[in-house]
Length: 212
Image (cartoon, rainbow, N blue to C red; front, side, top):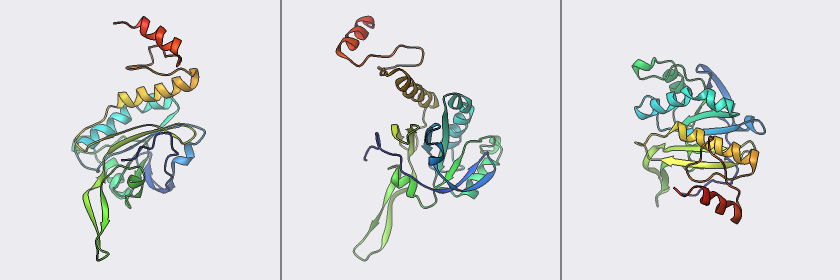
């Protein structure tokens, strides 16, 4: 699977549901260029089991992302109507009511293909018949896109493995810290810790003060 790190985020213009209730046409991440970082994440399907825990966890931390000038956008291969129905189903009935960040409808699966997260592939046989091998949903991919539209972090989990929203926030903090200070972020860095001057002297000083 090819990494997208350091590359422009693949562009798209698709239908989405925003504010938990409103349909929009031509939704694109380009609206955030020059304004916000974006945490763009894929999940397999609406009305499933691990997925609502992730989407609600992102909603619970949405204010923290917004404080960091970062938009959160979700995407799956479901239609906008499925998104809308799920968004308007109570949580005690398996829904995600209360989620307000955008949810993109990737019915063609082309967004998932372009981001390298589709859990299978289309193949053409000798008779020019097209079939799909694998699972026609997205893996749990997450991409941190900076204000210039460049992908700076990506992580892709298999379908049963839910992600850490706290880790996504930590990576946003790391990106913002690096861009503000020019320093890099060593292992297990968080916003309460110092950064690292990326020189021989800097690494020697850092390791010397972190012997344990």
